[in-house]
View (spheres, rainbow, N blue to C red):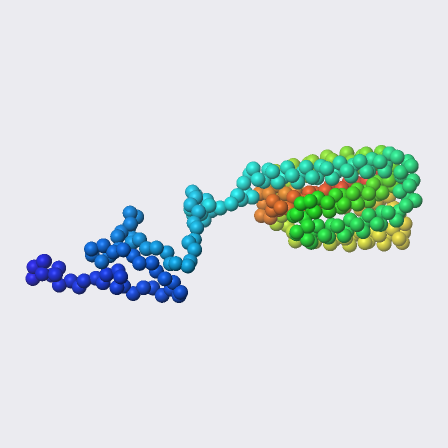
Length: 300
């Protein structure tokens, strides 16, 4: 047979309108115009044109270049250096305000003899401020909506800072002025050095949460042992210095851990909404280092 005869014996393809429509519940397809061959006109991109089913909204696809998802446009990521720098600036700005308030309170309680005597005769306010400190701290740390929502987060942080500043001032009032100034100076040097170390070191302290937990538990047991020793034997200058040195060392480790979480670039880091939590943790680390250094710089 000739090629023309073989071509004439090939079965005819069914037209587009005779083809079985795919199962699509409750969908009405709009009629499609066909050409002379019974097939719909081809589009410029190759393939056949067909309207979408009636009663269904089209899915909007955002075209973008080379972003996350291969052609899909993604929102800004916290890995963006500019966004991270803005977060760090906000955290340390809040931290500086907290330390400024605490420094003013400690200075008043240390240099003013009348205020110092009043504090020593009204120790009930210390325990009230301690209760406020604990409650507000738990609220901020346990309630995500509180610490992330402005101005509620700043109000709670202000109350927290004032309560803890009063506690710190009360503690500092029991030491002489020279010892408080020495503790402030040593604390400033230690915190600056630790912050630089936390940023520059290749050691990722955020992966050492288990070790830090063990250190915390050991320190708590050591503090209980010191309390029992104070109750049984009495005050000891040597034990005060040892306890203060160990406490300052423990919170220096905490400062490295929290600094790396704020600065980022490690396995675990804070999200952009957690600037209040970051500032609060750094603030506690710095002030506790100062408190534990007080016995080392004071003679009484």
